[in-house]
Image 1 (cartoon, rainbow, N blue to C red):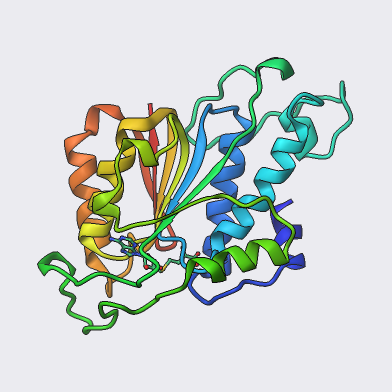
Image 2 (cartoon, rainbow, N blue to C red):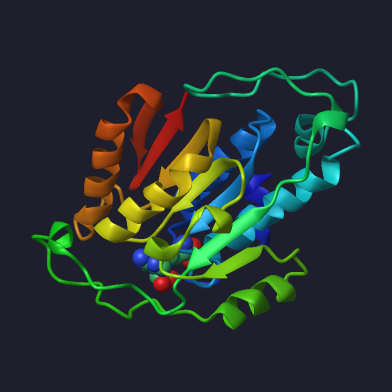
Length: 247
Ligand SMILES: C[S@@+](CC[C@H](N)C(=O)[O-])C[C@H]1O[C@@H](n2cnc3c(N)ncnc32)[C@H](O)[C@@H]1O
């Protein structure tokens, strides 16, 4: 399904590498296939390059609610066909729920829509001083236009600096989180504002974890991992992405 989506739809910006997008979508799909309960959040959505693909996957999932099992629908199988094991990496698979227990999932997007904030000391990099305050500013209306053009259900969009977000801006339960705020404080604040709502078995993907030009992303992630080591089931790095699986 992911390959097909990537073939069919163009990327609306160069802010995501297609190979990395594939990993992000694979992780998201796995959360849905394993019925990890909760919604999806993206902090640092820009014009929606990644969000549009998350929304496309979600539309397919939500269309399956109350009909077939999510896995059958996502894999295009008929009801009753053999249920192949889902490749879960390190994640344990929860038992599949009855269709009646499944709920619609929502996508929540957050951005300043004023571009990047100021860098702080942990963002200083040996490889130069790219990424300045105010860069990567998209407008909320541009993001909405991109969703409308594709006939996708509008996500919940919140314009704010991450540091100002509160519990009431978050879904009650987060099953999948994508952090793409580039800088130390942006990633640190992303963890701070979302962690209270993390569902059991949540997956968190952090962009630029392995990017010399943006060392703050790894610093903030490593700090959170150290402080929350008892909650972490597994952490791994794939391409530039850090991927955390919680217990
Ligand atoms: C690399 S772009 C995100 C790209 C996006 N994920 C995509 O797929 O197109 C980084 C975004 O994070 C936002 N951002 C970074 N730090 C932020 C903060 N502390 N609060 C709010 N927005 C922030 C910027 O405005 C920018 O749009």
